[in-house]
Image (cartoon, one colour):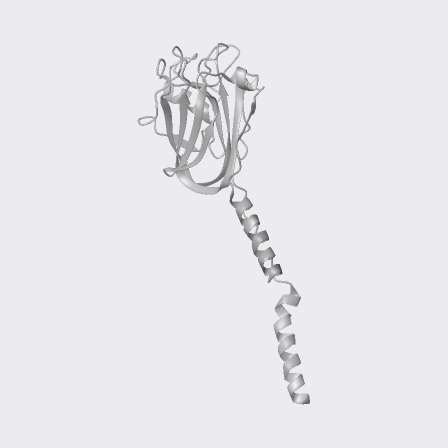
Length: 238
């Protein structure tokens, strides 16, 4: 009885631990303003997603090249490196048009061309040298369901004061989620001047494909027949 109780306790603790969500990490990012994250295994790469510009929060037009549109520039959030915020050095970013709106949520609605199974993401954010354009919170929804909610800063703080750098990378991982539509939410900081968040890159980490079930071994295939033969032989000998 004591052993049974011990086994139940052990298995209960294992189940509790495996059910806990993995905490997000926030680190400094040193690659900005050069091209940001690797497109390999990026489920959110701009060539594979369609942004719903009509429902997403508008962005500032900081195009530096002829023929550039804000729609093209919006793709910077998903790895595009054609429309720079400044002429030199290049900075492929998105700045939301919510200046002077402390605490406002900036929403980006987008969809993949087909269903995608996601197991995490990397997000790069960059503030001005005075701390403006920082975000206090980031959320990610899959088919309307919240799958990640990360607190980045306390209101009024800055990346540099909290993490020691003006550019940071937010990373989160979770149990694989399959979806076609997504919503990314960036919450403005509470500074009263330039509060429109600057987002640099959002990389979706596709879940690894499940390994196929192993083929049965010859022994596994023949064992039932061997057992049956042994039973028959034993009965005949009786």
